[in-house]
Amino acid sequence: MANTNGFLGFDRFVWFQGVVEDRVDPLKLGRLRVRILGLHTENKNKIPTKELPWAFPITPITNAAMNGIGQTPMGPVEGTWVVGFFRDGENCQEPVVFGTLGGIPEKKYNAQVGFSDPTGFYPGNEYLKEPDTNRLARNEKISETVIQQRRDKLKTDVPVALEGVSENGGAREEGDDTTWSEPTPVYKTKYPFNHVTQSESGHIKEWDDTKGYTRIHEYHQLGTFYEIYEVDDGGEKKANKLTKINGENYTIVLGEDRVYISGSCNVTVDGRINIYAGGDINIEANEKATIIVKGEASVYCHNNLSITAEKNIYLSAGGDLTISAENINMTSTKNSTVNSLGGNIVLGSALAIGINSQQNVNISSELGSTIITSLISSEMSAIGSIVINAFETSVNSTNKTTVGSLNDTTIKTNKILEMVSMAGYVNVASTTRVNLEAPSVQRYFPKTIPSKIFTFNP
Image 1 (cartoon, rainbow, N blue to C red):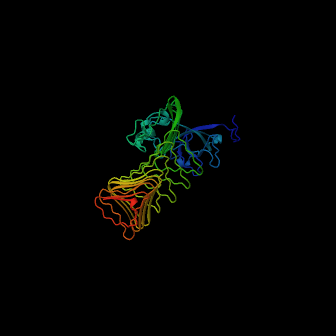
Image 2 (image 1 turned 120 degrees about the vertical axis):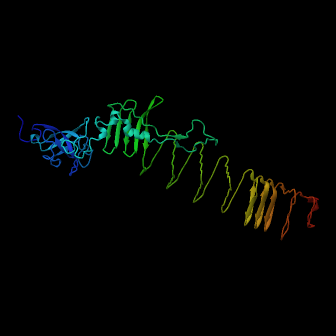
Image 3 (image 1 turned 120 degrees about the horizontal axis):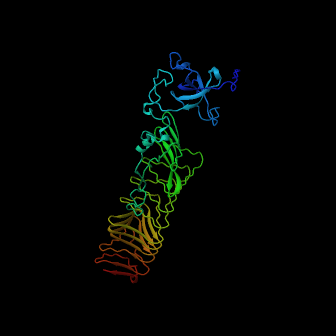
């Protein structure tokens, strides 16, 4: 005979089945109003939904059910079949729910009658006559799931840097990265190995244990997701990861961050890329570094800017090349060559122009003119030779013009050679010989010039 003292555990265990008709618990404890089969009538005029008792949910041992710790006790929706018991035994006034019962709904139920969803929403028409188990777990009607949505929205043919350009400046060689595409979902689930959790709005989590096609998939109903999926890489099992964000992404690291990639890395951005560092920025390449800008490019430095190459440095411009500075110093340990193949070479200074080399200085213009002008002094000197060649050559200053070397200094023209001083002397000096040649000559030389070191050939 059952104990009737009302002490929980010594009373008769009374269990039940029922249908959830209300889940909006004013106490927010996850309680449910359940119409219990065999205890309540389906006639809502006799027992309205609002008069059904609140049933407490039982959560698993992995939940603390204290101070918000663990998983919230929400899950069933209106229309869900549940199973439970009365903790007050045969009095049947304190129901507790500990499980749900799925099935295969055959039709929509009358929302005005008990044991159904009062809103008429569940079960949905598109889910009639099929198991309540998630389609992703059953691998059925996949064309109506997020897997098909992902297949329909694959990002393909993403260009990479230097697309169509090889190391030698021509077309890329076969095998080089030119574009890449989002992988097609690797979904080959076999029942009953895919464990699926889905929320009402369509958020999904999958833990797929299908042999050879294991996956972890977490999907937001608006299309942002990540997936970790199994692949066979030449007989070695690996797990690739795909992340896709339908919106903006924020990553904040309040410490140090480290990224290691054993292979290649392609970063493609349709808009702007901004990189800011409060300290140093270091970029190192063990092989070749190439930067191609299809628009304008600028490098601005608040302090010193250094460009160093252990071999050659090439500067090439299809238009003008302009160099502007407070002081410009150009030093060559061997040869210095300045050529203008189709125009003029102009060196101008408000003070002095100095061109110095430990060996040769070669300034030439094959078709145009070479002009060296200073408002005060123009000086050209070299330990070796100085050669100025051009269709027309001018070295001018308002004060003093000096061209000299420790070896040979040659100033030669096929037409007219003019050496003019407007206020002082024209000084042509050599420790061995001064040679001036022309078909027709006008000369005015001081008598003090030693004739033995001066040769004139008219």
